[in-house]
Length: 212
Image (cartoon, rainbow, N blue to C red; front, side, top):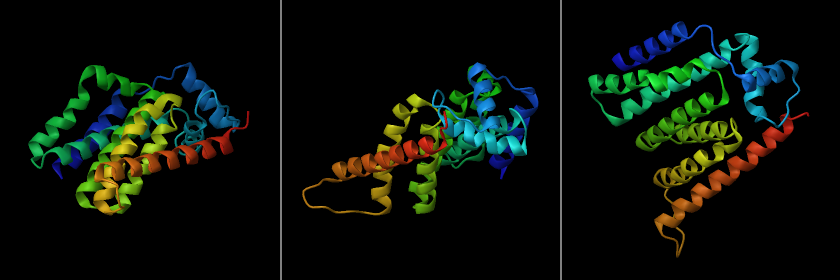
């Protein structure tokens, strides 16, 4: 409970401090695409499509800003809870999020920050999926990592090792034995499969959204 309250307080404080938000030229273009419904592949279209949904709830930059702030602090909270069971130590880890060079980045609504926040939350969820032996959390983490991969064209470089690690988590949840394949190769094969599946689904999703 103390950790949850601290995370909620961090979210509220961040939103309060960084009003109004900063948007660079790329973000302005993505918001324009979100509102027009005409998506190009210059920027990954999935973020603009998600932004179009958020824009109906919290217009402008606010919806995307709140989303990335929630993902960042929640991911950091989950990671802190995974690392240590001691509430005081958990809170200290979460407060690292106020390290100025890191904290100031949260003021910007750009795809780089969303990517980092999604990957942080997805990785923390994957860790907890392994510890709790939960397939539901596992597939949620895969979805989050795939979403993170679709926020930037080069995010695939971060997503790939996360999917490979997910392959070993999956083997722990659902042990598989294949003749002549060691656990190392089984884990790598599972990871490559999840990565390839996410890549193909992502390409199909982006392709169906892109209209320019």
